[in-house]
Length: 313
Image (tube, rainbow, N blue to C red):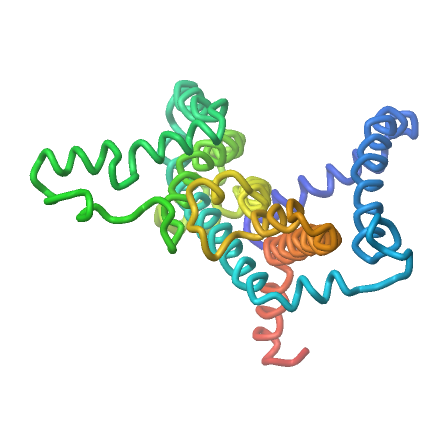
């Protein structure tokens, strides 16, 4: 076990001891807020599920049925939308994570101005950012006009399509400029809490700067990386306004597909829309659970232990 892993494990044990050692009065303090969350969100999910299976609703006879889920899953458009949503969320989250780690390492030794600079984009609404992307990157935007004035393109047709394109470049670019400062701010806080003695000991033992980063700094950064990337992935996967305004008309992301089914004039599609929404939530939960499992390192430790034991389980 490395120094970083032992420090992380010790911190986890201390946290569990503190939580388990809290008196019951402390748990009662969070009970009102927890009750509101459970009643509002849990109750909403229960009502949505009952409508999706035909037990509630104006157009149902009150009998249990999975027809709404069958209609949702049998749609070819659903699978195309799922693939597009995963592509956008995974691409934007991966790029944001990698770039945020590098930016946090660069800004680690700077003063508070770095954290302040990262906070500048946080209050900007996504709709304002979308308007900025359209003004800057559309075929008739400022960048295309600048390139035309410099003689680099002959017309706006020579400017690459970055908005409402099939590859969703405009959507990904918007999420990058919005989420990289957010993730950098989280990772900066974690980095500044890491004791420099760990890296100094590794360098004293002959580790290169890259080895020091890979075996010491990165494992200590992992809790911050996991929490930040989960927040970013969950938001991007369920985002509606950004792909609706910057994405292509076809295929659509899952939130847009749910919206169109929910606003359909045919009330029979209401249960299908609710089923699509619940499927979207279930997919998010499964992906987050899988990410947490992989981020814990348990599957990799199991493989390494099997290899160390000569392939025996």
